[in-house]
Image 1 (cartoon, one colour):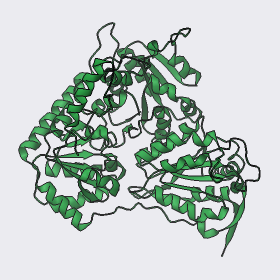
Image 2 (cartoon, rainbow, N blue to C red):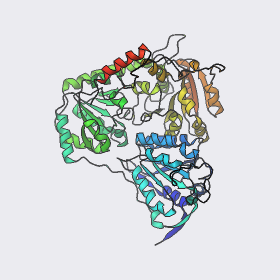
Image 3 (cartoon, rainbow, N blue to C red):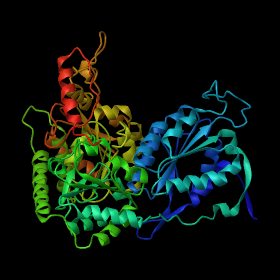
Image 4 (cartoon, rainbow, N blue to C red):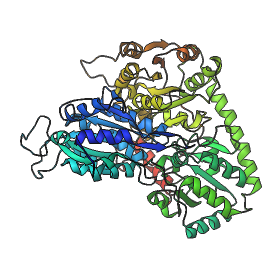
Amino acid sequence: MTTIRLTMAQALVKYLSALRVEMEGGSIEPYCGGVFTIFGHGNVAGMGEALWAERACLQTFRAHNEQGMAHAAIGFAKAHMRQRMMAVSSSIGPGATNMVTAAAVAHVNRIPVLLLPGDTFATRAPDPVLQQVESFQQGDVSANDCFRPVTRYFDRISRPEQLLTALPRAIQVMTDPADCGPVCLALPQDVQAHAFDYPASFFELEIIRFRRPPADAFELGRAANLLKTAKRPMIVAGGGVLYSLACDGLRAFADRFGIPVVESHGGKSALPWDHSLNLGGIGVDGGLAANALAREADVVFAVGTRLQDFTTGSHALFSKAKLLSLNVQHFDAGKWSGTALVADAKVGLEQLTAALGAWSADSAWTTRCKVEAAGWVNKVTELTTNIPAAGTLPYDAEVMGAVRDSLNDAGGDSGKHDVVVCAAGTLPAELHKLWRPSLPGNYHMEYGYSCMGYEIAGALGVKMARPQQEVIVMVGDGSYMMMNSELATSVLLGQKLIIVVLDNRGYGCIERLQLNTGSPSFNNMLDDCIPEGGEASRIDFAKHGAAMGADAVHVKNVAELKNAMVKARAAQRTQVLVIDTTHSRITREGGCWWEVGIPEVSQRPEVGEAYAVYLVAKQDQRV
C-alpha cells in the first residue's frame, strides 16, 4: 500500500482541496470553496502551516471575527443551495466559542459548514494551557463541547489516524439531503502537528453526487388520495424547494393542478414574485392575500418547510386544514400529526404529478387565488412607491422601493440581478411581504435563528458565491452594531457589498412587541436608555463605514437614497448608505397571531388585557 507521511492538519487540508462536486447541469466544482480563519494559538502552527502549503489549491481567507467568518461560510453554502461549503478554522478558547452562535444558525437552517476549532493538548502534558476551560468533573471536556448540541456531527481528533474515519463521515453528513448541517471536528493543537502514514488512496476521492430519495409507494398513494379530496388546496413552499433545486418542478405542479403557492422566509423566491399563483409570504409577517386564503384552505401541502411558528401563525393560521408534508427529513415530514411524504422535493413533486392524474383544484378557487395574487401585487406597488410627507421619516417599505427601483434607473433588469440579505428586526417582516425576487436565491433571509449580526457577514459569503450579482444588505442600526467587522473584510477581499443601514435609533421591532403585550416602553430605544450621568447616543454610521474602508454616505430622504443607490451600483468597492427611518410605522396589511408568553399576573391593566386576548387566540391553535 502506498502511503504519504503527513501531519494530521496537512492530511485534512489535502483532503478538502481534493473534494469535487457535480453541480446541477453537470459541471464539476471544488466542494470546499475555501477556508476562513483567524490564526491564534491552537491553529496557527498546525493548520496554519498546512493551509499555507496548499494555498494554490485551497484558498485561505482572513476575517475579523470568528462568528462573522462562520456566518460568511453559511452565506456561501446557502447561496449555493447547499451544493458547496466552506471550512472555518479558529484558535482554542474564545476563538472557538465565538463560532458557537454561527453553528446554531447553520443547525437551525440545515446549512453545511465545517467547523475546525483548535483544542487543548491531547497529551495534557502542559495543562492547563492559555484559554483552556477546565471542568472539575470531566477531564476530557473542553470549550469545544459547546458545539455538540448545535452541530449534526461532532468529533474530537485525538490521534492523527482518526481522520481516516472522522473526515469522510463529516463530509457524508454535510452532503446528506436529510441530515445536512454543520459539522465540528475539534483539533487538539498537538495532534494537528502529529504525523501519520496516510494511504494515498485516502486522497483519491469520488466526485460528490447528491442523492434524491424517492417516496415510499404507500406514502405516495396516501398523499395523492389526500390531495384528491381537496377543493381548496394551498402549497407552502419552504427552503427545501430551493435546496432540492425544485423551483421549476414547483411551478409546473402549481400550474398543472391550479394550486396557489405561499412562501416561508426560506422558500421565498421559489416562484417569481409575479407568477399568477404566487400569493406571497405566509404567516406572522405574511401578506394580506396569502393569510386570508390560508384560513380557507382545506388541505395545506407543505413542501420542504420546517413549519416554524412564523410560517404557521403559531399553528393557528390554518389549523382547520388537513396537513400534508413533503420533506426529505422525516423529522420535519411528521410534524403536527400531518400526513408525511418523505422524499426529495423535486422527485416527490414529479411522483405526485403522475399519481394525481387528471385531478385539479376547484376552478373557482384557482381563479379567486389568481385575482387575490394580482391584487396583492398592486398593493405592494402602492406601499413601496409611496413618498413620505415632507418632514416625515420614511419607513422600511418606502426604503425598499427606492432600493429596488434604483436598478431600473441604473439601466438594469429589476428583480433579476439583486440578492437581498437580511436576518433580524422589523426588516424581515417587511421584506417577506414586499420584496420582489424573480430568481431562486435572490431573497437570502436568515430567519430560522433570526441572528442579529448575520447580515453583513452572511452577505460576504453570498457575494463570494455569486460574484456576478449585486448583493444588497438591508440592516437596522441594532443589527449593524451587533456585528459589522466583516464590512472591513469585504473591502480587504475585494468583495463589493451595498449595505443599506436603516437607522431607527434602537430596537424598534422589539419595542413594538413590548407595547403590544402590555408592557411600557423600556430599555429598547436609545433615547429611553440614558441613565443619570449618561449621554444621548450620537452614532454616525456613515463615518463608521468610511473608517472601515467603504464608500459611505448619509442620505436625507428616499429620493436621495435612490440616487445614491444608482451611484453605488456603479462603484467597485463596498458601499454604505445610511438613512434615518421611523419605527412607529409598519405595513399593517397582512400578518396574523403569534404566540408570545404574556404574564398571567401583572400590576398593569394593559398586560391583563393582552393576556385575555392571548387566551382567546390560543383556542385556534392546532393541537
